[in-house]
Image 1 (cartoon, rainbow, N blue to C red):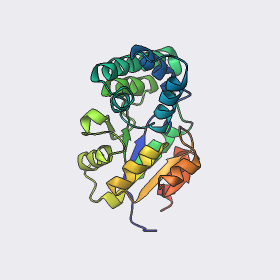
Image 2 (image 1 turned 135 degrees about the vertical axis):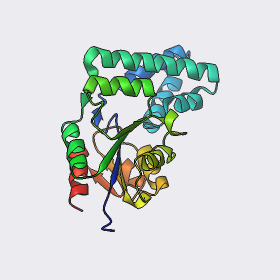
Image 3 (image 1 turned 120 degrees about the horizontal axis):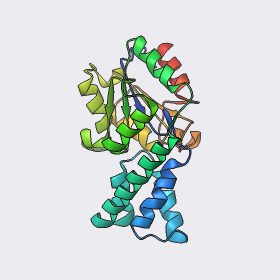
Amino acid sequence: MSDRRITLAVLDMAGTTVADDGLVLRAFAAAADAAGLAPEGAEADAARQYVLDTMGQSKIVVFRALFGDEDRARAANTAFESTYDRLIDEGNAEPIPGAADAITTLREAGIRVALTTGFSRGTQDKLLAALGWQSLADLTLAPSEAGRGRPYPDLILTALLQLQADDVKDVAVLGDTSNDVTSGLRAGASIVAGALTGAHDEHQLRAAGATHVVPSVREFAQLLLDR
C-alpha cells in the first residue's frame, strides 16, 4: 500500500455520515405512488429492490431508469424530495454516531473534507441544516453541481478541483454502497472504503472493489490518521 499522504476525504451522507433508518424507502413509497406504481405486487417489489441496488445514485436518474418516462420520473422525484424533506422536518435526521467528531478530527489534521450526496441540493441543504452541519465540512456537493452523480466520478473529481488537491492519489473516499465504491475507483482515489452503516453489506462492498471495509466513519478517520 502506498504511504502517500491523504489530503482530501470525500464522504457520502445518507448511510455513511447520516443515519438513514429507512427514510429513503419511505420517501420512495411516495415517489412510486406519484408515478402510478401499485403499492404491492411483483412490479412494486422489483422497483424497491432496484432502489436498494442503486442506493447512492442521483434520485432523478434512478426514477428515469425505473419508469422510462420523463414526466413520471419528475413526478416521482418531486414526491420523493417533498416526502424526504418532511421526514427531516419531523426530526428524523440523525448523524451516524461519532461522524461530526470524525470529520472535525480529519480537518484538524489538515485533511480537507467534502460531503457528497445523491439528493438534490435543496434536500442536502435541509439535511445539513437539521444536523447543524452547515460549516462542518470544507465543501458540500450535490450531483447538479458536479455534472453526474454516482457511479460516475464527477462528485469526487469536482471536490478535488474545488479543494485543490494535487493528485487523485491524495484522495480517500468513503460510502456505504457499491455505487460509492465504483465512483471512487473511477476517480482514481487511493483509498476507496465501504462503511457498514448503510445500504450495502460487506460482501457487496468488497465485490464492488472496496480497498477497505470499516464499521463506520470513525474507523475510516482513524485509518487516514494512522497512515
